Image 1 (spheres, one colour):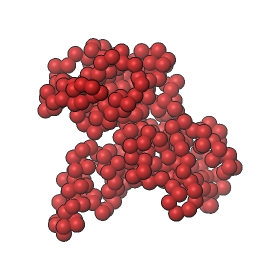
Image 2 (cartoon, helix red, strand yellow):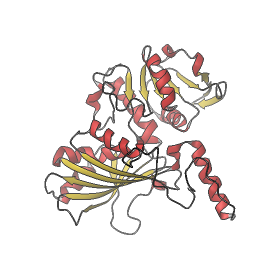
Image 3 (cartoon, rainbow, N blue to C red):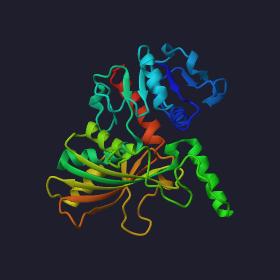
Image 4 (cartoon, helix red, strand yellow):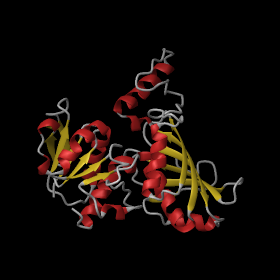
Length: 332
């Protein structure tokens, strides 16, 4: 069993390498692939250095499973070519809403993998952590509507955006003028209520991803309204989620269900500091749930605070868990 990573030098690619370094997955070789710009560079993996290969010359038949972590344009151009020789697990948005491509969170809808056609799509980072919490509650109480506001770290926009946050923060503290590069407005000491392009109805693509992907993964009858905000945090997405059920519920039962939810952990002490922040979730595989409480304006609704490392469970970790499931179930 061999693995390959397309986009090995990027944020998600490097996180995929880190997770594989620590994992017990049985594989023989790891091939690292990127653009001509990164080709020839070496990345340390376990006890050796692996040279990055040029995507334009790479032979996809070298690996049984190939992780695509290089963005939608690369996936659009190369994934179908690769899928003739390897199973593609794609981290971009390109395939997510295509009917014949499974969109998978292993703890939520692994059954979608049964009929894959060598291309499997990884959901949006903000969608993944939300559906982890929604799935067991929907199974028990039937969710009617979800209203979510996200507070998304700059790492979700790539390394250049992370560098811009650092640079702007330093310049603000020195009293220098700020000139945004990758963001529409200053991100340091600020919030930007805009991620990705706007559609004709005023929603952004990021917001529509959360709506459409949740429907595809969980249930097309769930109504979702999202507001996605970029915040001056390096890594870790946070979400304030309001969930309305078809019927009334018992809060103790809600908590009991969430305590048993795979991939999640409740930290909710109802006191100062008795919750999880994105800084504390950074580098952690767990998705954390805090601030569980009744919606006082609606007897059929609850509020949650959900935090997860967007580069781990929101991206690289989820793809590796998909690969692990395929190997376990022999769906290769």
